[in-house]
Length: 522
Ligand code: XMP
Image (cartoon, rainbow, N blue to C red; front, side):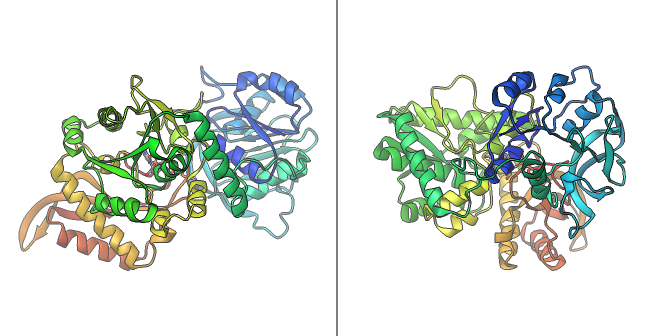
């Protein structure tokens, strides 16, 4: 078993996932429980996760140094590496340059963590997210890799089996990430990968096991819900649809599904969703038109977090109103793991933004919440949907956030602004589909930036809106890169937006990775 100590990293759960994918057991613990957990579980290896603190800050989150005396191999990732630098007599300082997103890493000295590198590149792309840096490796360790701005980007103490890396091997954008983790877990910690594969993760291609997972979930839902009445909020996205479908299999008619038309939906979306549920999934759905409620409550709201809370709360109020009619006390939601973690779902993680189906729920509401997909990632939910034979267009449909276009209209949300955005967004999606790129992209959409600028149309001055386009690729939501869309596609999108959407005079393309940006602008 591998023990992961969670210092509040956004991607700690992802480290766990990678280890489970190898068929090796793991547990995630908080720093204060680390020593007792080591005694109790006798892990073969310890991983120190990243985290938002600074090791020399006033509120530094540090483990009991006894963890380094247990004669167990240790791998420190990002903040974990800095902890090792601090507690094992190295030196940590604020970096001169921040490193967020892709960086070029050079392996400067062979060591067990990078075993089998003979045929691999010594210079490869890794993803970083840090400010502090180790200036001197721990006593007994030597530097094994550097980046252009960080000399000690990796170190190794082969005798004590202590390793540190400044980058994140767990995120899918880091080249050779799985090889590095496998070297630690299998080669250095001598884990036997024939272990427990009873969780969903790690079983991706095997439909039989997905079927088993589905069966178990349905049984669990039956137990959790009993004979109670349940409501489920459908957004049309894959998460809530899978959650509803599984619940329907479990309890049948005791489930009432609502689809709330918030007025924050994309062009033609409500009609499309209604038809898919009715004719393809054969899941009874009640459509509630609540545009008026949402726009009224959003009046004057500018702050993004406030907006998310208002939208989350309005959802709940609408459900409460509607569910009174069916007497339901339970609400099923399609929350997935990244929603939980990005809304400060673990003790030491920082809040990035309030995802409406997690943190946005007001403390006082009348429901017991059931979230059957809470531990899963999007690609896993898609695999389940495939196994359930969901229509293809539903599986490949781009992710759409719960708060909808509300977080893509920057500043106050109004009906007029939503209309402009809807028209521009439709063009973006149409052109990307026409170019045959839609299915290879995680998300593509338009943002109404709120920036006005000067244009010239028909020899007249025109002071109008700026639309931003964002197209990104991601696998696990935690990191993302912008898509290198062909210039011709960008040109067509831009031409069409400025000619077909009267209010817009300027179109720009967002070329930021996550981190440091997030996918949605708000
Ligand atoms: P960010 O902007 O946090 O987005 O990088 C990561 C992914 O999550 C989606 N997203 C949401 N999904 N409720 C959701 O169900 C939300 O409140 C929410 N906010 C962002 C976003 O579209 C992206 O795919």
